[in-house]
Image 1: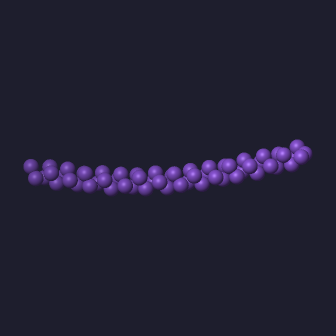
Image 2: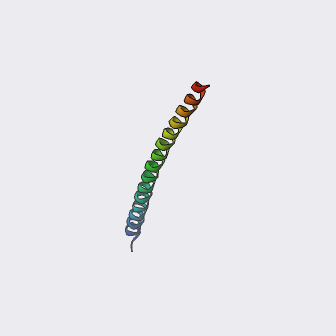
Image 3: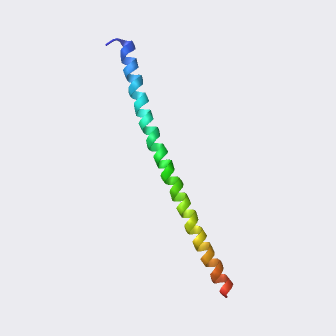
Length: 57
């Protein structure tokens, strides 16, 4: 195999690897965004409960 052909194979392999990694990172970002949204909801529930408890005193 010539050097040019090897470079093309290496480039294609690198591209495929980076594409796969980008897909994994996109998936992880989506998961983290959902976890942050869930955390925000839980914080609102706790805040509401604390405010109600304080108003009862």
